Amino acid sequence: MNALDPGGFGALTITKAITIDATGVEAGVLVSGTNGIVVAAGASDVVTIRGLDFVGLGTGIKGIAFLSGAMLTVENCRISGFSLRGISIESSTPNAQAFISNTLLHGQTNNGIVVDPPGVTNTVVLDHVRVVNSASVGLAANPGSIVRITNSDFSQNGNAGVYGSGAAAITLDTTMIAANGVGLELLSGAVARMANVNIVGNTVGFNTSGGTLNSFGDNRTTGNLDGVQPTINNHLTPI
Image (cartoon, rainbow, N blue to C red; front, side):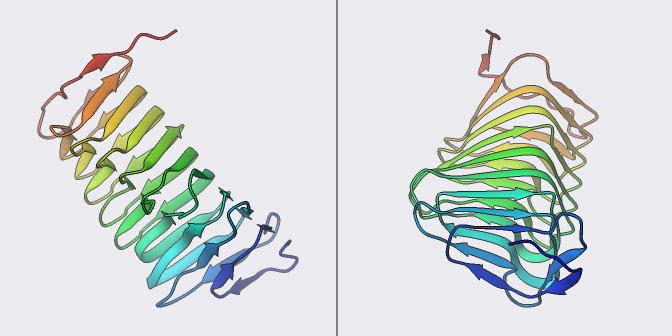
């Protein structure tokens, strides 16, 4: 489905495979007190959302909520002003995948992106994604999350820029984590692997006492106000 004319539209629930493409026009989802787009699709369905602006006006709940379906792709979107999560990846479909690229999330009054699968595994790929000025966490990966991040920016978020808990697995490559409350936070069981990552200017650079941090040795950390260097469990060797 293509948006042919510019305009602001309301909430939408998607229950089947579809592409919503607003490339070339000014089209947005403007909501108050509810979710923007809810994806509650079938187990084999693929959904693509492209070129939309999501505005939550401070009371919208989640900009995009991925509740079920095989795959969600979000491209070239802008999401702001939601009270719980800008994007929520929580598909009940086992091994569901989400791909988010060239997308800006700013000014959420709680969290930016949260990956929180309900007892299954969700794999999320972020490429050229900026999550800035969230009141709480930029990116949260909870148990069951596999998150791969490249060419992205998590800055000026009130709590952690990037956060992992439980058995979450996070890979970070060529990414900036700056000016957050905590740069990288890993709670018990979470694992992160980093290459060419800048963690700079955070109030606390690292809180990784409960998790495992692996480094390829080409990361940079400076200007974090606590001045504490992280404990690296493994220095990985490139192949």
